[in-house]
Length: 189
Image (tube, rainbow, N blue to C red; front, side):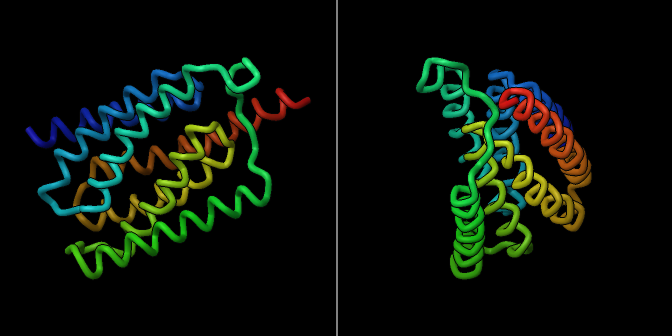
């Protein structure tokens, strides 16, 4: 039963990423349901950051769907865009700060066998999700950091289907980056 739920979460997660690459607002629905399944699956294993992040992702999926469904301020469709250096620095600092905060919480208030991995992956994933909602090209770079870290975490914890999923997510993040970069430069040219 749990393996079939994990496989369903994997399929929904893959659909989410493919639809993000295609800039389809329905990606958020697939991502939200995948996240909720992961909460059910990994709460018993005490992967607390992963569970917490997936609860946050489910909420952010609603925000993403709403943001991608409405026109931008100028009435145009929300387009792929680049972060300027100060904004990128802000996102990097936020990711590092979130990772540090996650680590402190895990160290002092919760048990986690993989604190460092959960902290790095969690901080990068939060920055990635916020950047994805706003269609910043750099979201894919944050996803790559998070995904590679999760590959290690899930292999170490014996969650092989999900580890394989995060290998696929890493590859898809690279494809997404290339795809969105091409769209960005086609738009600004």
